[in-house]
Image (cartoon, rainbow, N blue to C red; front, side, top):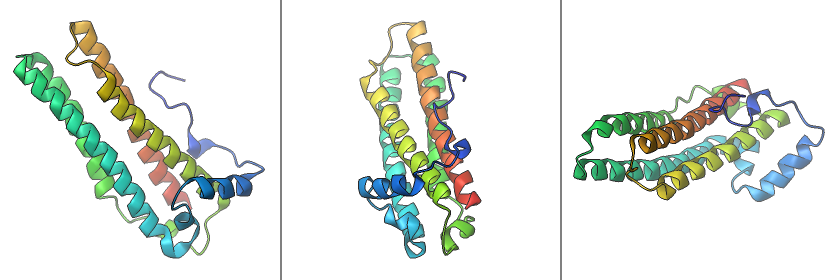
Length: 180
């Protein structure tokens, strides 16, 4: 596994023996899970999930914009472009979530969805929210601006790793929605 790959790829996870029990337990832990299982609620639940993702991405955007302002104040223009590129990438991810195609009509309109597919979607959702929380905490917890060129390099590498993970989860989720 490479350093920038997430620990788990739910699109390749085999079906577990206790899938139904796992889903029942997850339904208890994850508010709104019922929306995935019941056809009439799927689009609503997906919109709710996307809203939560967008909220976290907006928080990350705000934190990056604060760092851009610090760079400008400190006349650290050499790093402004690098951080601005990451900000644009984050905005692209937010746009992908905000304007997600509703081309997953098979998932949203199916009378039933396979339990293993539901399990993998829910697992991906949970991992996505963990990745989003980790991203925001990294931004909050990293002293900024770094004091050295090496510090900037480490900050940008960590930021790229978090953005890679979030992007991977969003792609995996969309792929699962297309699989039904």
